Image 1 (tube, one colour):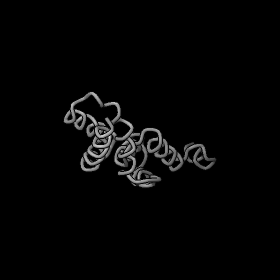
Image 2 (tube, one colour; image 1 turned 90 degrees about the vertical axis):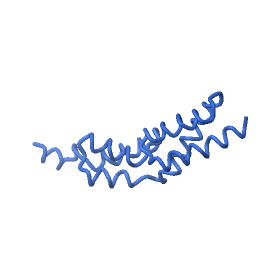
Image 3 (cartoon, one colour; image 1 turned 60 degrees about the vertical axis):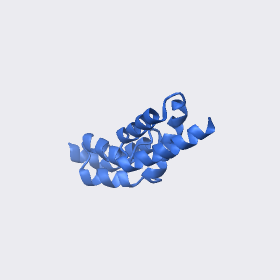
Image 4 (tube, rainbow, N blue to C red; image 1 turned 135 degrees about the horizontal axis):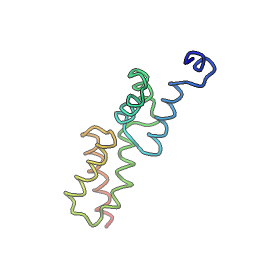
Length: 116
């Protein structure tokens, strides 16, 4: 039964993985690690999940910087140390490595606090 469904194109893990990754990279600005983990949790083979996660239109540093900039403006009344902790934690929860998360948070907060 599954073979027949695959043959007629109703089950296509590769297409699902591609669409899932595009949505997560675009709308949620998630990191590659989070996308790969989400795909594996959805039952996609690890190799296919990793391939889809590596197919991002931009790199993790760019997406992390975009997300950090968009969220930094909301932290204007928060002390700098707390704002940094909150922003870097958000980025790590979204699947960015600690190094990328801290770097993006630091840069975004420098810009946000300079504008005040």
